[in-house]
Length: 157
Image (cartoon, rainbow, N blue to C red):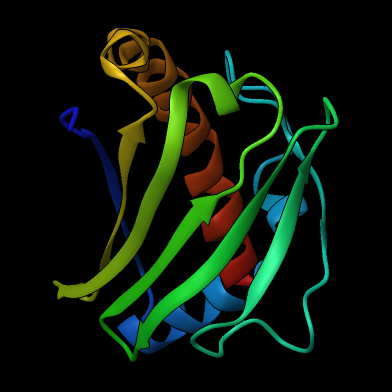
């Protein structure tokens, strides 16, 4: 088995952990991820989501601007500290590189706010694909850097 590739990014937001947690559940992906970040296209839409996002086991198909898709499954929603999901069934270029992504948001009180940490554990399709994951990682870090201000602005309204 090929070793996974780990990514992490965090920010401190001036809200309670519960507010940040609910904010992530409620945020439309197409509003958080509006621009291309290197190899990663913006999110165009989510399909097949029945009701509000937040029930463990719930799924939705994430459609990217280049037409590629993946299946997101909510794995855990432990208020207010931990939100986990998996991404599978990739189409498009990511299908060649990634078998599965384990995503996580954690929410920890810090000062008068909350440190929100977003992490991805990418499971490559094979050892050769693992060599390309630093390029995906650079794109993901850019995506995270542009997502945090959008997420913070949503919480401020």
